[in-house]
Length: 379
Image (cartoon, rainbow, N blue to C red; front, side):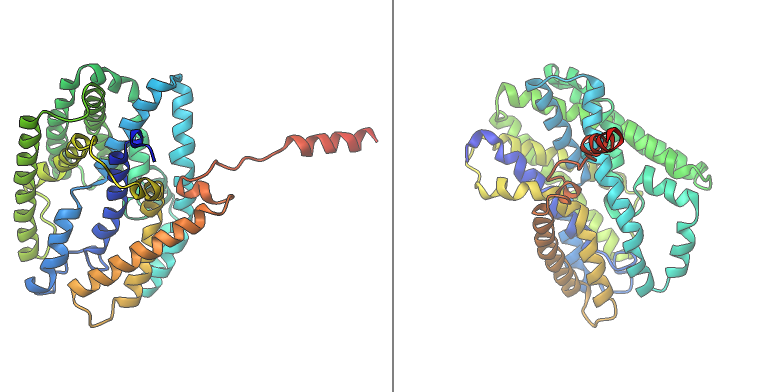
């Protein structure tokens, strides 16, 4: 395989997809950091979570904007055409998986005793509004409508390709997001539209990631690798951020709850995907194994489908005597392997491959039907 494919970017795609499995497996069935377990029993999954969650969904945003702007350079398209393409690529599969998980959730709800409330929720219009607009139906399904909202602003990002310094706006947008979130949670959390307000703030703030992706495209096209001093500075920043994440992990382990209000952890979480992208980009000139590019196309499907097998594992093991560490290893290993085979199988089915981003959206072929109907009329 030719090395001009940017295998380093494929590696980031694969890391981002698989990391979501580890992230969701590193908590108990209620999504909590094992509050009843001893620290020695839960420290392994929580520390592992700190490492793997350097590849947050924000890394997917950087990759998506980077690739979109790169494709627009080689094949310019009008705004409407570009957005229509993103609707087909993101929102149509999203609608499929919303419908699927709305039904699939019955399995876990029945196993954990809240099937009745789940059924009641499905009768409420606000539930479907949250599913469709926020992606609340399952885990990180929220990423797809959020990414689409960010891509609506792609013409703005182009300015940062020629002026990479614009990427530093991410510091301002993340600061504004943090302050806005604190204010909104303190004053409006009881409003019915509160989740929608939060999501709007998030999309506006995440425009900063779009500028960062465009900046990195500009840097990449000028010279693939960062200068040695800058590269070492990025590594140092990454080490400081990772140390901050480990400190935050200790607070979570000792408190038994997710510690949301730690300002240092906030910056570490949201800046690590940028550091990871820059490090990989700087190593783009090195040889990367070809198998990475063969596996990377399945990353989107792994992202979309892994909750199926994580739910199955949680249902099977929720009453088992396994401790958090053993349960994490079993669930994570099972979900990654099973999801990979499942996505590969789906990709081989022409009529379903589009659901995991590996095939064209099927269209209704009405013209032959209309022609046959007209022939019958004439006869």
